Image 1 (tube, helix red, strand yellow):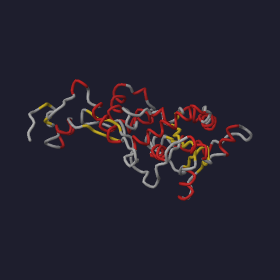
Image 2 (cartoon, helix red, strand yellow):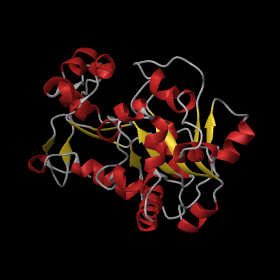
Image 3 (cartoon, rainbow, N blue to C red):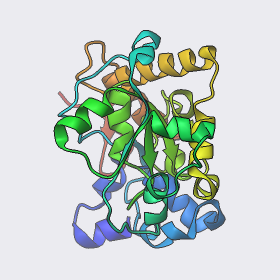
Image 4 (cartoon, rainbow, N blue to C red):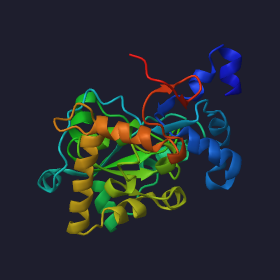
Length: 276
């Protein structure tokens, strides 16, 4: 609020808007100031930069960066036809916030030959960069898509996986609270699989193999939830629920005691007379 007032004469207006972001800056701010032990020290510096001005807001998650991919409805029949178990390809780069070790672990720390983990690796498309045509082909032919923390806890790899009906397997402890996609409607754990960062570093392919050992019932439930998430997240879905989900987030972000139905003076946030 103070920053808004210093920068703009009408800064108080910004205090009374609802802020939709790719991440939950309000939850980040709360944890930085009240619960610093709830996240890795790797994120202390970038998290400290998230300082929300408005009173209210919510996370929509990442919404861009998937234009080159079609929406492929998540179904069990389609899941069974896919060639690869896992898809994961990364650049051989250095990543910020101590994330390089996580990003490269499934490529550099390989399972021992003759193990079930080695069989899972052999049936997966995992490695460094692929030519663009192969990348798309392999990605859309994979059952599970690995999403690993990078320069931030969230990743467009998650959004791309949802779009093509590939079950996201997430290695990012902060992701579920840092950048949930429309959380008043969706529960990230319903349509993805979470692997703890520490366990992943110790033995990445042990954890990746274990993550795929679901019963048929569990896989069907994940895929049903994933198909629903596609409708909620993507506005261009034929049966999109994005707009009602967005409105629900906006309404739920306001504390019940401060919700006003009718005309509002947005400079003060108080109810006022309606003018035609």
